[in-house]
Length: 196
Image (cartoon, rainbow, N blue to C red):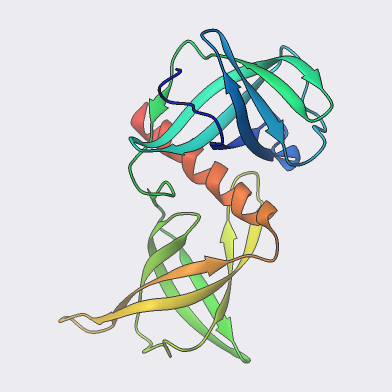
């Protein structure tokens, strides 16, 4: 684990109740554990209770489950996990995400058929030629009937030979909490799909 988690590395920590997700930086690494200095007070994060961890490394997005051996304020001593998994090389885990949704902008709505999604953005097909300079609101259905509100900005619009357009773009969020929720959703779905 020592070669995967290094000092000053940013780590996302998600407890059982993902509403209390937190992030921080690694301040020390040893053979059996590493020290994580959180950005926020560790609400609902308990000693000896498993959480999920995500971090970006030179090998790709790293995922593992572990627990805090010790919690002192915002400083956590995290046990080195028995195993870990690389999700993929890109910054955000991209998953297949097939839904019929609507984008809205300035009182108009546009029907879209999503193809894939990540915390960074999404790709979809539409019959509408969207204004690439505009921003759009979209509601993303996640788990447990939870809907995430995001703002979408097109980056690339490709005309399809059979008609319509394929659009790729990025999300912006009102707070980092929404991005963390979508990061967790995509990572969980990615693990589920690989384990099928």
